Every structure is written in structure tokens, then in C-alpha cells.
Length: 437
Image (cartoon, rainbow, N blue to C red; front, side, top):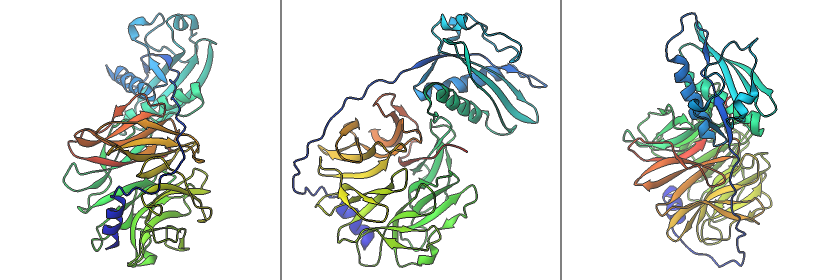
């Protein structure tokens, strides 16, 4: 059976011919951390509730801390008012905040009536300049923590020009309830919930570019791997590529950045897995690789012009790169006998991958030309399945460093390791979703 063959071959540490191509190692630097004074927001609700503003400030400060860009200051250090007054007509004494080391002052007013609304102002205290004034709205029944995380992401962007990712989501696989189902959680581990509940084997979730759908592999039909879609938007949930019938085993699918195509690792009967390009409705099927080797794990470049993938054509699994039409295939990784699971950063600068060195998997980064190759995170228990945050500043991965597999997040400079799952089961195969729209 081709599925079993693919797993067996890619699970063997066959060492190919040694390549005289040493890695160029670099030492990641530390990120700049800005200090922020976050006031307790004024509660302008028709019926203010004691503790509501403080609870919201706690969520906002936690989301800012998660960014590893903005560090909230202790409230006891404030020289200025701890609570926001009127957003209009009240002067901000910037020296009160700059003297305590605050780079930013975050003020706001929240109301919870027919809807939940928050209005904020963000000040650069050194220049005494207002950077942001913005209003957020959502249904009164919705989670107010979502608004807090969106605000935090906008505060981050106002200081570094790159949006934060506290409000984004991560899909992953978990067997916490017995079977391997697809789950979704906030990037910080908040609000985990199931996206599938079919009782079969479900693997390899991957987001659509608009964040409304997740494509994943499931054995729910004829006990063989096929692609399915879980949707909360316009996408039609259920099996993808029905037009192809049951001739192929579909091991993994990933959407192109514009959503027009999928790159799919699949195999025809009695053939090894190849990389194909196909429309989501199954039309315009085109083989991109044609070899006797096993080709799997496709990953799009952010502009959709290239694909990274894994092949054992050299004798062991290695990362390769090709043009989106299948041309100009070239080997990218040469260090280590077993390299797999490439993930292209959204800014196009890096490809993260897992490399087996000394009997364990670690997460490495390599540039698309193969000139710089650097370890991102290493641990004796092994780290696997890297996936990038949409701002390219963080990487999520799966690790068994505590026994069971959990999802971790780390900054691209190798700092700020954060465990996001605590289910008691095995949580694997993370896929970081796009910015919310």
C-alpha cells in the first residue's frame, strides 16, 4: 500500500552521499522591548459593572506580554492617573509617563450595552504624539478577550510597524478525547475547541488564505487518506477534489496564497507520492514532480511563485525548492541526513524545517537560497512541525519535552518560549492561521 510505503521510507534514516556544503551559522539577536502604561479603561456602560474594566485590562496586558514587544508596567509605578477619564477634553501629561519609563500610554473606554464596544488612544510618550485612536465593536455575547487581543496587536503595530498576532489562531491535531481530531485555539492557547468530530484519523490541518476554512487529511472515507474541508465561512465543508474520484490517495494539501489552487501530495495506484497542483474543485490537475522517489510536504512561498517540498530522491528525505509550475527543482538542505516539514515564512526570508541530528528532531531555519542555515530551537526530547505566525516573528511547533506532545511558540530570535496546550493528550501538527479580517 502506497500510504504505508511513504511513511516507512520517510521514517528511515537512510544517509545519502555526503555533500561538501557547510552551514553558515548566525547568532540571533535580542528584540527591543517597549514599555507601556495601560490604564484601567473608563466603563461608559449604561450599567457599569464593578471589576469589568480591570478584567479587560488583564486580558489586554496578557496579550501585550505575549507579543514580547510591549511590556506592561506595574500599576504601582504610575505617576499619572490609573484610570482613563474622558477621551475627549482631558489633557495627557506625557512627562508623568515618560518619567517612569513608559514608551506608550494606552487609554480607553468600554461599553457593554446592546453591543460590546471599546475605543482606545495610544500615545508615544517621548514625543507626546497620539499614534492610534480606534473603535472596536462586536456582539455583546461575544468573547471580550478577542477585542483585547486585537487591540494589543494594533498597539504592537503602532510601535514596530508590524501587526501583532495575539488575535490570530492555530489549528492542530489532538487525541485529547481519544481519536485524532482537528482543533483550533487562539495563538496564545486561549479558547481551544474542536473543528472536527468524525471519530476517524485526521491529520495535517492547513488554513485557507482568508482564514475561513481548514483543509485537512482524513481517513473517514473508505479508510484511506483524502482531503476534506472544515469551514466557518463561504467554503463548502466536506470532501475536496471529488472530481478526482477515488483513484488517488491524498496525503496532504495546502492552499496557494491566492486561494486559487492547492498543492497536494498524493499518489496514484501503485505509484509513490508526487506533488500535484489542482483547483479546489478538482479541475486542472497537474503533476509538478515526476520521479520514482517519494515527494511530500509541499509548502508555498508567500508570493505563490515557488514551492518547497520533501523528497528522498537523494537517498534520504531532504528539502527541495521548485517553481510553481514544477520547473527548476533544486535541493536546498545538505546538512543532516534527514530534513523534512518545510514551512516558508510569510515575509519570504526563511524556510523553517525539522532536522534529525543525533537521534532527535530540532527546528532549523534556512534562507531560500541555502546560504544561511541556523538552528532555531533544540531540545533532547525533539521539536517537530514548524509553522509561521503571519507576521514572521514567531514559530509554533510540536514537542514532547514534557512527555506528551504539546504545541509551543517561540520568537524567531530563539527567545520567549511559550507552551500553549495543556490537554493531557498529544497535540501535534500546528498550522498558524492568517490575520483576522
